[in-house]
Length: 122
Length: 110
Image: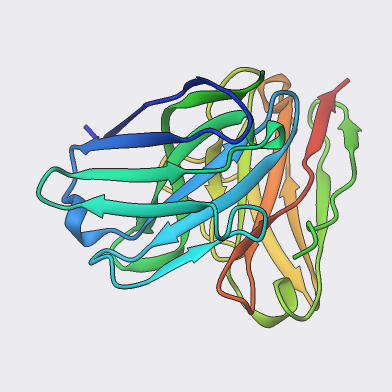
């Protein structure tokens, strides 16, 4: 059974840092490109970042580039998001998502797990 | 990267068909066949229902279909059912190797 358990969220002051984790199970994590997607309370979805399966390529959304860093540990089947210089507008539920495999690779991602909530407030 | 444009809300009666549009630019929807759609119930995790314009994941009803014309992608739900009432989001790959979402559409089944 495919599972992705996100953790690490919490309350942080503006300007602070947090490190989110997403532990994967039920699939071969090292084969999959992975994404972070977020959703502010009552708002729509926003793509945050992507990392290639081997970690060799990373892309970021405009609103987080230079402040957030995506990484992964394939031995631990875990995805990370280091968030620095946090702003109130970064407050959201952060979901991890994996690239779609359906007998072949597709350019799409499947959002799995309940996500982890980040609150940025003084 | 500007968000894709979706209608804020659409509605339909049970049994009818509805279409949700998602408009972008040549730098995203128009330039790639990498458009996905998600269904989200209140307080729940978004569920992928269409990928790469028109592909359905296993287990997704055939009542959901996707298409694209130029810079606009569309999600059509046929034979509308009460359980289809949810928020729907489109997303597209972009020329800057990022992804952009639409603002979301709230579907009401009358």
